[in-house]
Amino acid sequence: MKTTVIVVAALMLAGNALAQTPAPTAPPPSAQPAPVPSMVEPQAAPAVAPTPAAPKLQLQEPKLGASTRYSRFSKGPGGPLLIFSGILTGIVTGVSLNEGLAGQHQDDFAFGVAGGVVIGGLASIYQYYAYTSVYGSMIDTLAALDGFLLGFAIDDMGGVDSQHTMLAPAILANALLVTSALIHWNADVDPDSALMVASGSIYGLWLSVLTTGLVNDLQTGVDARGVFMAPAIGLALGAALTQFVHIPASRMFKLDLIPIGVGLLLLATGAVTSGGDRPIVWGLALAGTAVAGVGTAILTAPDDPQPAAPVATQLPFKVTPSLAMVRDTQNKLQPGVGFSGAF
Image (cartoon, rainbow, N blue to C red; front, side, top):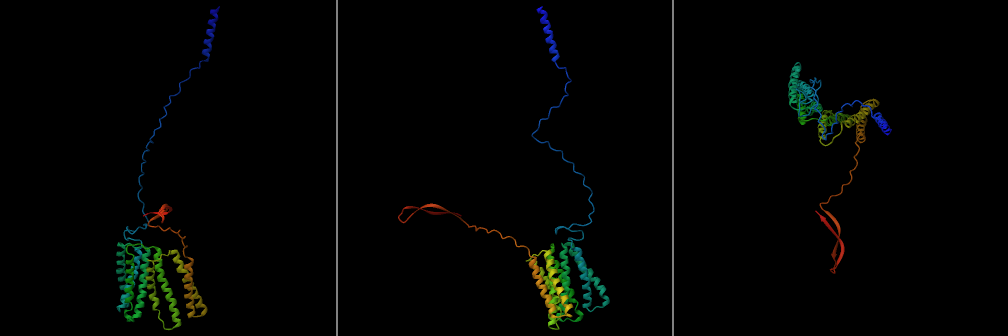
C-alpha cells in the first residue's frame, strides 16, 4: 500500500514539473555585436571639387589699383577722359597757332585736326603707361581750360599785337595740362581732393566776377583781366590746400552750392529791383557769399571728438616712501621717513 502511494506521489510531482516547464521558442536572430567606440574620430572622405565652369564674359572691367592695368588700352580708368581732353586741347591749340601765326581762316580746320591728332596721341601714350584716375583727368581738363583763360589775360596785359594774341593761351593750356598730369603721376586722386581743387577754381572765378563788377561800378574803365587770371590762381591754391586740409566731398558741395547760390540770388534780385548795375548790388552779392560761406562752414563742421583723459606724467624713475631709523644730533636712533627709488 505504501509503495503504491509513493509511486502515485512521484507521478504527480513529475506531472507538475512538466506542466511548469515553458514550451520551447524559436531562437532569436543573431545580433551583431555593438561596435566599440573608438577614441579617434574617423576621417571624413575628402569631397570631390566640382569642375569649374567656363569663365563668363565680363561687360565691365573692375577698377584696379595703380600696380595693375585697367584694360589692355589704359592703365587707369581715367585714360579715356584724358584722351578726350587732349583731343579738345589739341584742336583749340591748332586753331590758336594758325590764328597767332597770321594764317588763313580756311586753314583752321587742318591745323585743328593736326593739333588734335598730336596732343590726343601724346595723351593716349601717356595714359597707356601711367595710371590715371577719373578725378585726376577731370582736374587735368580744368587745368587746360584755366590755362587758356590765363593766356588771354597775359596777352592783354602785355599788349601783344593782335595777330599773336592766340599763342599764349595755346602754350599755357598745354603747359598746365602737362603739369597737372605729372603732379599726380601714377597715383590715384580721391574725390575729396579733386573737388577741393575744382572749388578753388570756381571760387576764384566767382569772387573775381563780383569784385570786378564792384570796382567797375565805382570806377569806370576797369578791365576784366582779373576774371581770366583768377581761375588758374584759385586752382593752384586749391591744389596747395589739399596738402594741409581734408574736407569731405559731401561738405565741400555744400560749401560751394550754398554760398554761391546765395550770392547769385542776391545779384539777380538786386539787378531786377534796381533796374541796372549798381555798386550796392555787387556789394550785397559779395557780402552774402561771404556770410553764407562762414555760416555753412560753421554748421557743417564735424563734431569735436571727446577730450582724451589726462595722461599721468611718467617719471624716468620710481620713488617709494618708507620708514627708516635715523640718528639725531645727539647720535640717538629716531624713527623717520625715508625714500627708496628705482631707475
